[in-house]
Image 1: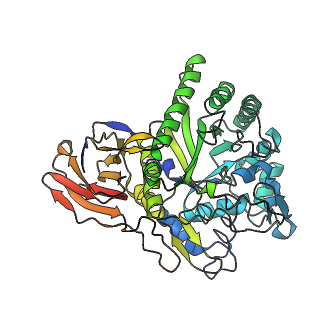
Image 2 (image 1 turned 180 degrees about the horizontal axis):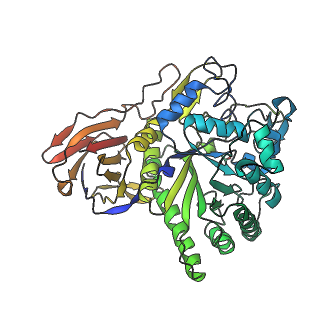
Image 3 (image 1 turned 30 degrees about the horizontal axis):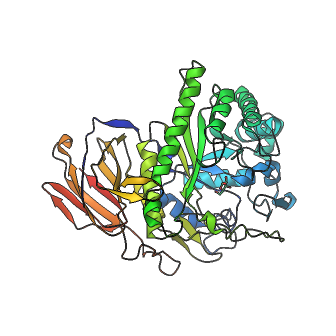
Length: 496
Ligand code: AHR
């Protein structure tokens, strides 16, 4: 196969938004307990945080972290998680049929964020709770001092305000599984009134209204329209959530998952702009794609009815293979290609729970296959996103019809040069990609790496943690510039 694309710094989409490289920590399974926090672990620091996980988090290069859920937040009482540990109650977590010990709460989370060098992003409970509790949490977190809640925070050890800018107004309120699930108009009204009140505390907050929990849900499209009609003036973002998996051995469709994400984004942008036009507003609503990943949800390993209420059980612990990382890379490319409207995103989640980082309690931490596309893109995407339009052969997929074999995006900055991110979706053939870089004034390929394997289902494990990792791509020609992309591969090509 042969394909071709042109790199031209004149064709800018938008600046790279650092917030595209956000993730998510939910009180779910072992994400918090034995994930980021394990006081008995050999690498634990004075706060009980695993240093090995902190190191991998820094290497992953994340920008924001959404917290504390997810479905968990819709039954959460934030007050349970602050103050002296001995007085924190244990509670039933209905979302994940677990017991929440509340050893970690908002103050610990923000402390962890500071250590990791990331921006905290907070979700409020609009399932069982409402405006008052949202205002209390906001005051507790962000008010400097001199009120009961701000002084309580200081007494709990956090003298400086947490300064949290970005707030999610609930989680997946369109989903019938959500505690306190609402209709679009019920939720739209509550979200608007909560946002208005929060802005009375601080007009500069960045607020996210819940969009759809998937583009396949029956209310998709109508939900966004109704919610935005209520909230347009008081929110900045509408959220999108999407998870993908290989079904029935259909690898071709799975590798084209970003086709659905593209449809999701363009539909939500169109809906938001339609509401803006109706309201005669000049404001644009951006997308916070604040849950996205590969998740083998239909295997149902976590859906068995349970009668027990364990603490930090093993839930949603998907072990990703090479093909997962390539489908994942395609999603990342789509997020970047839409950087004019997708200005924030959160990979769900960070540790153990459908995560790029895995740990064993008391044991090792390691990088899953999906760690690598994320870390490379976060490290190298800089400056502006460039529009690239590959001329590529296509293949037939059961789910999406004809799809191009190559999916790509590039970024460009004066200092950092140009980086091309590309996947080859072919399941059996390498693809020769020709790069026309005449507009880059003599730039040459200075580095090319590929993530590929002879076994597309090979995985990293605690004992073999580097089976799937980027390796130098030796199949590079310079005049004309050509790179050979192996079948089922994620590729990074730097030009300077
Ligand atoms: O990320 C796992 C779960 O997926 C989240 O709790 C929920 O918001 C979504 O359905």
